Length: 302
View 1 (cartoon, rainbow, N blue to C red):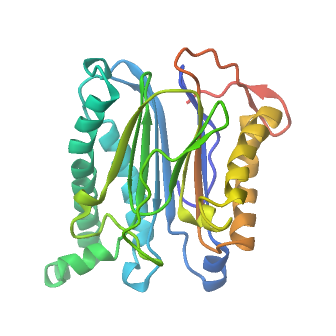
View 2 (view 1 turned 45 degrees about the vertical axis):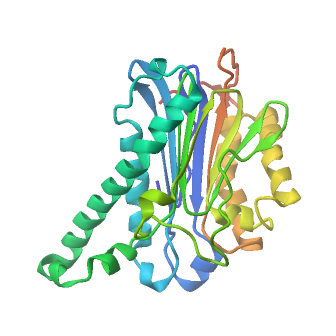
């Protein structure tokens, strides 16, 4: 989904998820497309419910003129690869064992799948002249970051290449950044699926599932508040739980496009994407309802 919002989707016994992308204020003024993308999926895989999300931020530089396509392709292949067979969760006695397997296999699979899709798209655009173009230069045109998660009955799997924010708001109101912050780059530079050594640039983590809010966002959101460690941004994160509790997930999802547009206009000016997952504790028992914009309670199933 690009530059739009989605109604909440329900993962049986796992929780709710919704997301939104908005074209940045500076992109609107400059006539540039939205270069963010996101994808959500819920269903059953390996006989267990799953919630999957992917968020991508295409690079804005001129050499990345097809990055909005690259971002969309990245979210598509991320969902596909997160549904590729890993050994069943039950085979892993610890999150460390599963994390080793995930770190060993997922970055390579998703990076290579993205490169294949990019090459297919480039061939369709360039036709016979494709073979005369520098392959690395062509791939750079599609450059994008990628953040992903898969929530299953026992685990929360996370992976990221490039900038953006993955954070978790626990039930006791702690904000946790499960992936290490990347300090190797400065300024506007970021790692990318188009990087020559992209497979080695991924960060991954596997956590035991617990209840709380999981957020995946492009850097346009936190930059609008002064950065991911800024108190104003963290107050915004905590306010999401308060708004969900007071108004319901459906109304928050309906309001999210307006909020994100305002943050971009008053802050970074960049495209802004946010995916939010309201995850139930492992024992279940979440009674959260989804409300339509007229306030009528409604259970939403995907």
